Image: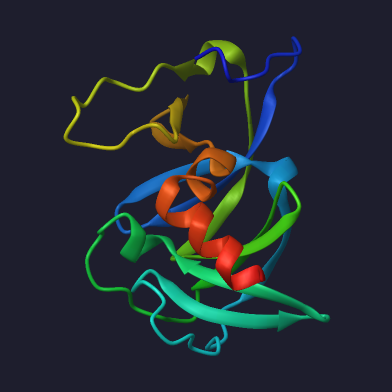
Length: 159
């Protein structure tokens, strides 16, 4: 849990859903939320990369998190949105089922993620945030987007 910064005050997370689960990412990484539009496909990109969009002159790779996290078939509906993220010097879009809200979590509301063993790659999960009866899976989006498969891919697409 050492990589979660605590400044005494709570940290703000954007809550979004993928399938039955609710996730949270640091709101400071989010630049905007857009309606889903069909991106331009890129030949030989992995299945979880839907393609790219042109966002005011910046070519942005679009990653479908439902496919990346193996959460079944990705359906695109009225609530499907793309969260545009600033990851270091790169801009990346991630497709999610819906955005719930922005929530502030105090340090005591964040529990360490359970150890799932080596079969599951949980490197990018920083903890579980609890708000009343809700549980948010808190994702370190920098770590996730710079993991081996994603980092190389995003560099190639930006080139």
